[in-house]
Image 1 (cartoon, rainbow, N blue to C red):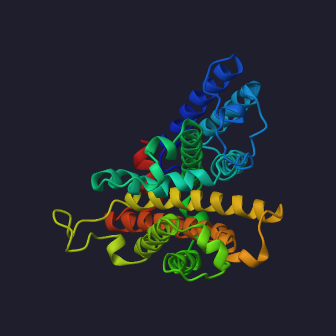
Image 2 (cartoon, rainbow, N blue to C red):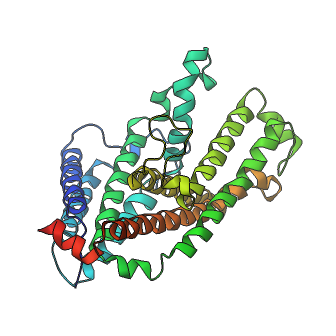
Length: 339
């Protein structure tokens, strides 16, 4: 028998699909704002797989969104069918991993810097938040949101026991270690460049980035390394109980979604950015002698997959722990929620 922990995710995903489908119809009918093709300021013209589409593609978007809404609503019903579950994951993968490109990760990574820089009178290359988040990139964020809502509904559709057969605490710990280690390869190269060490690149390549470019790269590396440290919280006690040094929160339980939502989002954008570099590598856009500029990024899908695995393991473990502490089994807790 299929167990539902909540129907809210399915209804939220259906509402997102209907709203985005309405946008697709509007674009097909001539409304402004189509985020791909001529409306996308793609600097190289090869970032998005939808770069060659036109606003008439909005009809296809509307049709796909209708199928998404139907799938999401099917996840809210008690049924033993697996079709909605697999369809939901396929659509979620399309929205989270295929539609976006590496600019989404760049926008997320540079946002903290762009928010703080004006206070010190420093503008990194003259860039602003508007440059980091033009509408085509914001649209990618909207697509990822829809995919994550659908993925959450799919997770709620299948009972914990089925997930737990693979997403065990042991695998979660291994996944965390992988998610911490993989980005360090990228971090090492960018830190080296900021120090003037041509690790994985030629001296000429390094000279081309003088004037602050490699400092920005070092910032991104540090941002990734700090994210790796936060990933450790998925298996450490401070990922469940706020540490003593946090005023007002010390000793309180960490809400699971406080870790699950950002970790799930970061796992998706790192995977997308890595897949972009892999596509470019296969297309022959990089020189082997300059491996430091592209090879570390090709490992990012491993980083994203490991982080996603660790996040799911954390989510299921926290849910099981919550049920055990309340003295109610997941099955009975689910029936009480539904009633």
